Length: 415
Image (cartoon, rainbow, N blue to C red):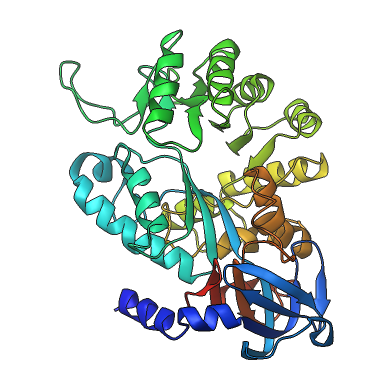
């Protein structure tokens, strides 16, 4: 039914209407940097043609006008860390999804998840690992690009790279081969595997700089700094960046010094780590939403005192922010419901980040992290017309991001 509804909405704006233009008139426009009261936006074809007070937009005759009182228009939101091929862990655990769900079922779920994210205003998504589903994320990306299914513009990481023996699923007898949630590689073989993943269609290369493989199941570093640098240099020769899962201080330092573009999670950052990240401009995707969701699955109701892991996240996020670490909005959605990504922005505000800074991070900031700031993330003349309109003012109440009234992707009204 949702797919049919999306198709009908597209039919409501035929090609001729796109050529004439679309004039969006909200109460205010957030352009990726600042909020402007009384602005409007003119879209022609797939591009933003004019922005500013209505009397300054030039000739708008013939454009389809959408008056939207009480709303805020923003650049299309950008999700920095998602897993379209996973669904919430309170429904089915990660191990069971990897071992028991067919790739066909996981792709079918991914189609639904992609549409849910787009309809919630997330017009671009970096998907960080197929978690045992091979290059199915590449197929989803290509199907969206071809218009086969609705979904956010995807940048995908394929299978991701892990050190031999570190990743799961685990707990099986030694002679039993089970599907892994990522691809194993070590040493010199990292060059081949990195190239293999790029050849398979990965836009980003993801590696796990640490994982829960210590003597007592605790997180410990996996790859050496030299190994991570090998992956970074190999990927860079193809024009791609590397992203690192890292939750220990040593794993983070090795990855940052080796030149990764962003650190995911960062649970055990130290002043030394934050200073190094700030100095090098390494982005942090704190994935607050995933930690919050897992804590709630375990029985926490959101009240104080918070579980230890939540308290740690709050302290670490605040410390990274104070150190000037570039902040990504990346929720790890898939651990919780697709379409609910706004929880990350809400938590970032709740943990002390200024609302306008969070909006910048979710738009122009994430665009810069993805090296797409010349195409998306801002409401400026010549930019791709990825836009979302929400009820209320998210700079006053971030929950407004949940009240989506319009989604425009590449000039097409999707919702």
